[in-house]
Image (cartoon, rainbow, N blue to C red):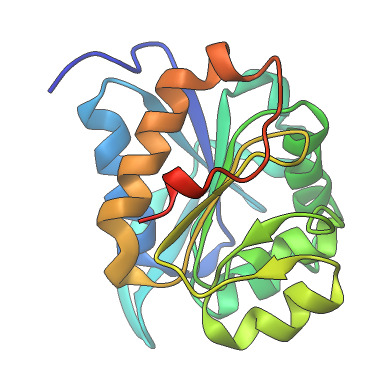
Length: 201
């Protein structure tokens, strides 16, 4: 692989338990393959417990605690899913503020599956087009967003680039759009564009 993303730092915000492991590890591995530097940011120090659906999977070390983390330290944010994970995060004011700060700073955010629950809580969905696990459709619509049923959506109609996918089956295209967006983020951060239909599969 190339060193396209060398020096890029990416925060993976997850709760202490409940994250869907493959939605953490696949984007992580894709970034590492391009020499980016991913970090786990969580609500507590120590470790986080990942899950394969409802079964406990592996444990991962926490690199930073969200209450002391700053978006200025990172180039992008990834929000993996899992049902419990974003539900815990949206009840944590520091986690919600951390998410919002990436939008305020115009930095790329990638979210998959149930992850947009935290975006809804952060108040950053209005006017954006995104996808998610189907059960979040009403929440996203009620928050002022436009929900579509597509494997990946790249929305640039707001202050930042927002990448979203529906489920683990979408991870290959999700990871590809994440690395592609990061490689272009410096060039594209000056002038936001409307949702690019060509970006959709």
